[in-house]
Length: 110
Image (tube, rainbow, N blue to C red; front, side, top):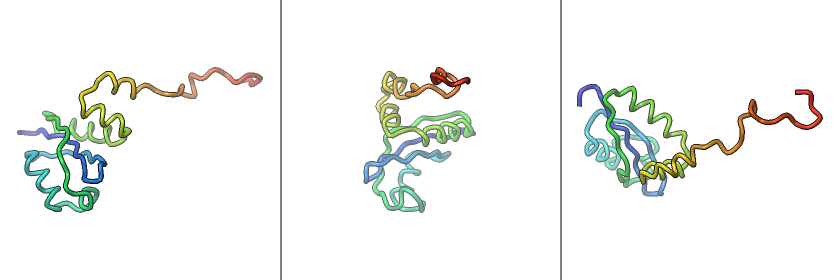
């Protein structure tokens, strides 16, 4: 484990998900969450359970993916945890057209 890090997702006791990164071993990090070593989100939602992890050779890549996944819907996180690529792709599709791609409104000049 040189310059890399793990991206991980925990399922909390209340059923919510926590996404984080660590350069230490996953066993140590999960134990720290369950021991209450960290304040914050998981403190009041223990015990937590590891449901997903991925190793990145560069810590910056792990952090970039953590930030991306934190913005995902619960359904997208669950599809990723299951490894359901088809569902993940479907959930990633834009539900509405971007404003620049919408057809002009009838009667407008724009």
